[in-house]
Image (cartoon, rainbow, N blue to C red; front, top):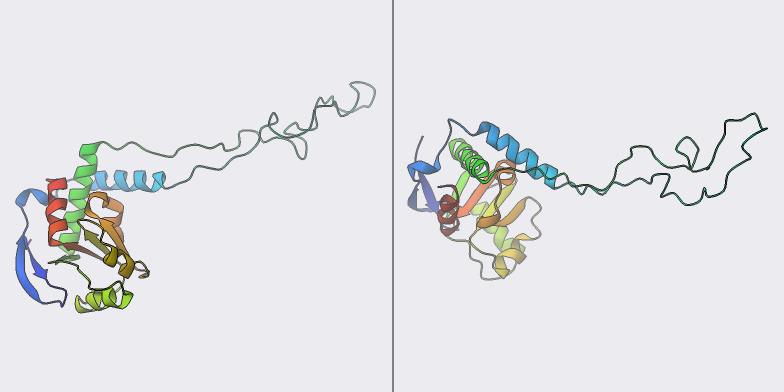
Length: 208
């Protein structure tokens, strides 16, 4: 596998080469780590806010519905019993967290494996810099057109700049991320992953 990536400017021209350190590529192991990390990430996105009321929480039911004896019916102490219409729910969902713990070493391995796979696919683009003179969406669109990027893209930058945030905010298929917050799921989700050179330097430090 080629350990060098072309560095492009915003016009799409090749202006240099980025040499990847040997230690940042991992294709022999980490498949399970990627799976576990993605499952944990998606589980963490669940709100866990589903809630049903038990018989103790349903309003009403304080009075005995009918007398204990003489009616021929089964005795009942409350009309909020779970077997009654309008009663409580047995074993229903309650607010909970779906978070799953993933060790730091596993996360790092998963990032390295996911990054390596995208490199192997040729889906990683290295940009010298992403700087815009204005806040216009069409300026950002022009850059992606120059880079021949169609479909979804993850744009990874060292830090958020107002002009870039405003220009990419209305692009439905482009997501802007600070390099420190890029995760495995997002590395795999998009058709192309665009790193600025400085962002890629920081990312490699994360997975080294």
